Length: 417
Length: 167
Image (cartoon, rainbow over all chains, first blue to last red; front, side, top):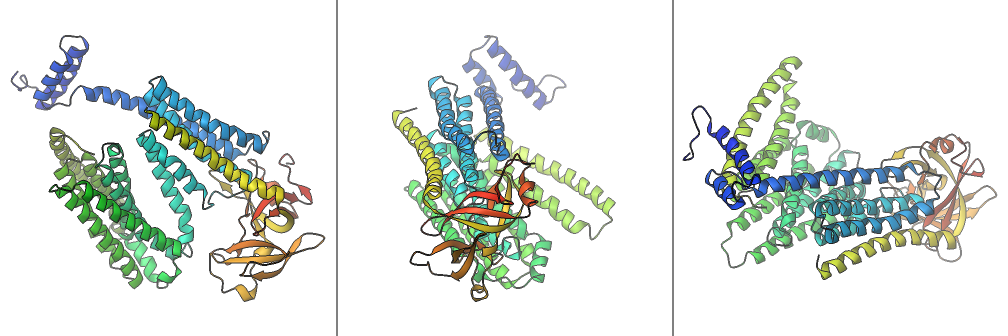
């Protein structure tokens, strides 16, 4: 074959057909798995293990969906506050039920070898723990935004992610953390439903930077490496959200019309959270430097630069909002563009496909919403829709082509967390 | 799973159970040992996605007097209570914790300039919030500990304990 397709068949069609054939030859015993891998490698195709991995991943996804549904069912049961069972009996049921779920998950995972199903059941245990906390609160008429509820759920669940090394439990923990901060945010600004809410933007940017820094630090250790990507992705998404918000011209116009924003209304808890998050991000950066000691680490320089840039962006937010500068919207759109380009460059340089995917997603969302923000004032509505559609199709095609080209190149070199 | 990981896992599960029992225990002890007072309230009826239907209880004693109107959100204030035949009412508001044998409740100033005593919600079975909302008179039996922290014991609807089956 010499790597060339037969007459009329494109290179991609040939490679696709060859991959299917090799799987079948392997399954039929015509060739050994090592030989199959050798053939696939010769044509730059992913190894056989990937197909098994996809199968395992499918089992995981289905099991996690099942656990999430059961978890939601438990939460809905508690929310219904069914009066036929006494509150204390429900409480006893949950206090006993949560460890029972954990033990079942543990047995499935580590005694009977059903690791993926067992992990999903352990995830269900983590959800049941949170549901139990809310049931206790409900029994004593403590509201859902009680300052201790969500933090207690988060602190009770986050160690589980690292003990059983479960990305799904870590994902749940991060969701709980973000919800917990949203509940606490009402204590950070004088009125969370008023213009002062915008002060949450720089605070969340710092929190996102901390998650990103934690992800980069954890990529340096074998034990925590599986968590690096999810922490980094969530961190960057949390960073992107406030930058995106302040890139909205309408938001800044509204703020300019309002009374001048002042810092003295922000609570001590606000500054404590910001200060502790910034300090921990700096400690994580120090940890990365320590881990990379004795090596010329250009990756560290990229990471340190990214965190330094985020510190500058956060400072710009505080100063700009304090000055009531309406022109900030284009500064933050430029920041988004610079960030997207930096993420694509970093993804390309360091073989991180997820970074490129995230950058493309942020760019697409920003482009889409900014177009509608400014398009309607200039064009008739129908024309705006058509033009937007054409721009998105053409832009999407271009971005997808770029993404594929980058990912193909990365695929050849192997991805990293 | 290694022995060390198994121990860590077991410790974590035990910790979660302790958190649950402690969270309930603190309130159960307050309910059994605290001072009972009855407070007048005006409820409305929203819903929590995580905890279901509940009534928001807006207490008469939550309104700050003129001499404390400069209080900022988050500030702590104490309300000294006096018993009357109908319910307990406020006789004084102060920033410092009262001393002596007086009965008082601790509150935190909210964004609306009223006191939040941490007893502003009363969870009810699904679809029964209207019983409270449509009542002519709603009072709350509250138990106070030595520091003025409050836990709801029950809600009195038109003089009777709340009954979700009274539809």
